[in-house]
Image (cartoon, rainbow, N blue to C red; front, side, top):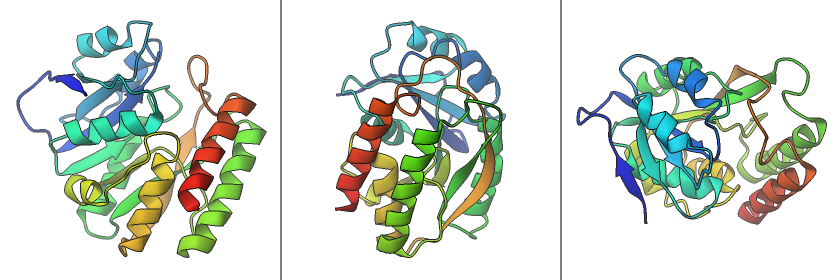
Length: 226
């Protein structure tokens, strides 16, 4: 069960879902780059470093999702969102939320239904080799499954809230981003991608920074493709 506290009762034009697990150090940078007028929805997934308090103090809406898992956090944020347009972005300062305006523009003008940010690593250590290899293998499998000519399964993305909910996403672990694309393709959505710089993250990585984390993510996503 989720519990949320909102910083405003006014519906924003865009809600940005930020899954969060121990990202107190990165939150100030991330939240400062949310576009003006948009609402940041920080989904605390069991942080022990005071992330929720930091996010709340910086004006974000905070949602608590006790069930661990990237998908659990993302979906809790999606359900808590109220805007017609919803974005997803990592909360570790590896991606600049300010760039979401370009993704949203493509959805808003009707040229795409789901837009993904194709990560372009900037600087040493931004995207470890083992993580890139896992991502590439999954993208190739995705192309064979859906026919989509994508190059990345990046976490930065934008779409409309109601159609996203209607996809009926069920994965609550690392397979959530892939399941979203697979189900969107099955529904005939126009799925596109645009380049975004990928920066070295702030703090310790729970997924791409370790072989074990990457293996678990690949395992979850392969299960979705099966």
